[in-house]
Image (cartoon, rainbow, N blue to C red; front, side):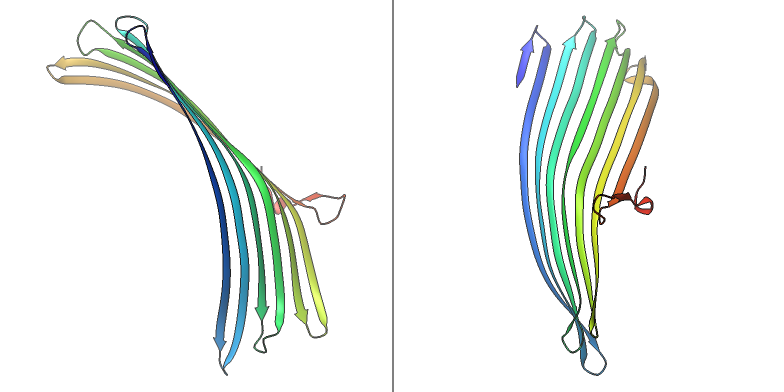
Length: 231
């Protein structure tokens, strides 16, 4: 979308949408050869599925406030949602081709990203040719959230016995980043095709990363794992 009005004033906007649907299957067989013509083998079957929905909006607005004064606004919004599923099974075999251990894992999760960016520029030209004062204020905000559930089962086979270890784990993450700043430039002509510029820049960036891993193995008694979590 593009629209001009009032002679030199203009507004432009655009919207984009995309969908990425990916499936990746992998089969692996690894053999380690030992002395005495013995072999240790590992087989793995893995599946990765993901879907990403992306929305993006861009806006640019230019406005002449007076003969030598102009205002420009640039902004963009990006919103993404995603779904993810991963599964894998790994089997280890001894030289007699007996299974010694099996590991099964499944992970299902979803998340979203929000990305906001904007800048506002005020430009003032003076009667003296080449003398310009420009001030730009800018800011951004980004957040990334994801919730997931990991379900794993490990089985170790020994002579006459089997050891089983199960894991049910919740994984929640949130990353937030926002920044703002200002840029002031003054340009003064000192000779033909020669200019002097004074610039002042200020910026600030703040980040926060939260990660919470919860043990859900005991029904009705979730426990946060401090060693794997952070704030």
